[in-house]
Length: 251
Ligand code: UDP
Ligand code: MG
Image (tube, rainbow, N blue to C red; front, side, top):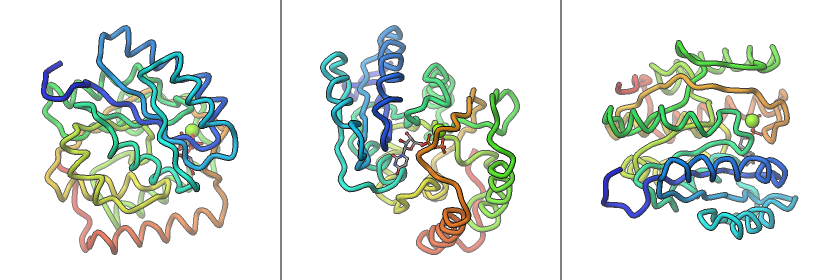
């Protein structure tokens, strides 16, 4: 990869009560990237966890020196954790990925190709475009709620994206610096605001099919109350970002 920035890639992992899944998945991520001969860092963002997430990240950092802990207190929500990591990242390219590795790290190559060769500012993993491989899909009620929410997203905030919610997205550091200072959402739907801002900033967005294995063990509870909150957040994003007619993402 080119020069300019000392590191090729930063991997941001938001982590709320993730001591187990970090211990399970961080070594694999580190080994994979080491084999690719990349200069990289892994930023574990402890999002005010109540378990030993911070301690586990420090232990991992002793074995894998490219691992760093960003320690947030109290809990902000996934969006807040991701934003803290993205803004601290030093790599020429920056990926955020869930601690459960629902999309395995190996998929990063597809996103990096879009950034490096395709000239895109943002490359998002997707379960909704041809070529995606989804194993153990979500429970029917969550899938249905997701469909409705996707419709709401199009009507209220952003068009032209099949899957806004896959937790596996990469961008150039330039794009990170344009986008994330303007993202206000701390919630699990911060991605939508990210796409709205990216589009306004003129960044091209590639939607890339990825593998995705649903892990039913979730830190983002889904119930009637959280569903209502998420819808309210969609309206809030629309308001703070001054969306009148939802723009289409730039391809
Ligand atoms: N997460 C976080 N803060 C929170 C909730 C979740 O940083 O308040 C992180 C979590 O640790 C994980 C990612 O967000 O890395 C996605 O969470 P999860 O896989 O539990 O959500 P799901 O896949 O069920 O949507
Ligand atoms: Mg998950």
